Amino acid sequence: MPRVTLVLECVECKARNYTITKNKREHPGRVEVKKFCPRCKKHLPHRETR
Ligand SMILES: [Zn+2]
Image (cartoon, rainbow, N blue to C red; front, side, top):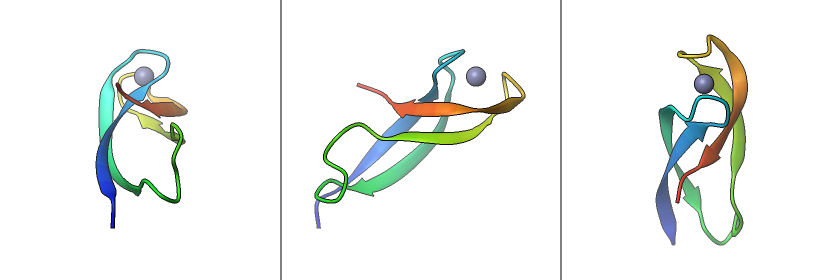
């Protein structure tokens, strides 16, 4: 199983708030997840870094 660990950063303030694992075969592209950013104090899209 090609699982990779990703760091998600807030698209607005670039804070690195979450780490997730994903299956590279199921999600070959960049993932974007809507999550709560404690710095912006609201829900914002978080994108994987690198
Ligand atoms: Zn933020």
